[in-house]
Image (cartoon, rainbow, N blue to C red; front, top):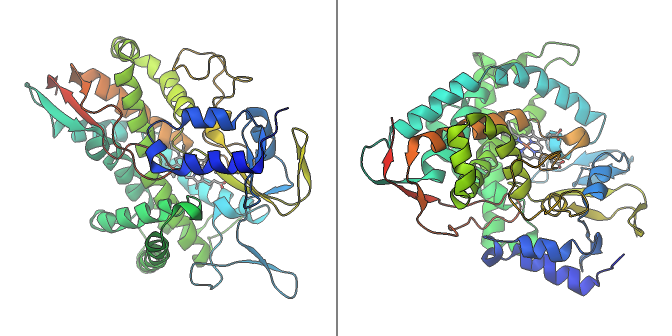
Length: 412
Ligand code: HEM
């Protein structure tokens, strides 16, 4: 096995974080992936291999809790942005707390997602109708479709009033930038992050208060009321998990739809096939997820010494599981740098795996399938105005900032 020096790994990883590499980070991923496990100068271990990542995602010695603090009596407490004990977010909890929160959320989320395709069809139609024309025009796929679609859906599901959406949009932007490693953020961005966390929480407290006083048919009300063996969700947990669902609904599927539209415009043969046979959309979306993952990596901590590919990751170390590298691992995928929707056995790891497998995967897939099918059917003569398009600075939740497409007509 090739081993990376700490210097090489640190250099490569910090290049990946540079905004100038956002349009095409894949050559850097490929270089990093030559070292299945690499340690950076701050002691974080980077894991790149598909099989190692899938194994670690399911390893009980691997924790998702990044903010564990031991109290004098040995209890573990998660701290919030202001230092007070925070609600417990699904994503950053280990069993058994994680499993109960997940059951509570799934119980009320899944029935609301089942059968939602017809509604998504109508939302997509409405968004594109606003730009329909018999003559030439331009569409910003991000602003006009990829962003408003998942935002409308998640706000409706949760019960966030439409008029509050612009406020949440700004919070979500700041919060997701905060997912990136701290060294890639300025002091001002760190301040904005803290402010956004507190403001988001205040808004969620307000929303929960309103639904407590007068329940509606939405997820906030349902989680407050409970049902089933697990009962209602405790209010601090509810507030934290609502914020997380809202951010996930704002900042992930937008990238999937935009990355998908970009891939279609760069591969006219695939676009042509989708137009003539809309059933090809299912495999197409899976290949977009593998080829250009909207979430490029996830974080973990080692609860014990763990051996990975001949390297021992010591107990207490932070790890980054590099999903984007695993999705292009040549030991798992033939010709991984090629965009080939027809590839067999495309078991990508873009939605994670194991206990924390994405709860929004079905929703994200449905939204992307409907949006990309509609774009293929309705756009005549589409072409990219700028290739590559401008990208957002975010390294982890990566995607275009704008995606301008010129067309000859946009059918009704
Ligand atoms: C293309 C879109 C999406 C991608 C690529 C994505 C990716 C991921 C990944 C990789 C994880 C696992 C994180 C980890 O293991 O640390 C995850 C978890 C999660 N996702 Fe998504 N996600 C997407 C859309 C959504 C949507 C739309 C929602 C909200 C409805 C959502 C809600 C969540 C939640 C709550 C978790 C935590 C699950 C747990 O910890 O048990 N995601 N997602």
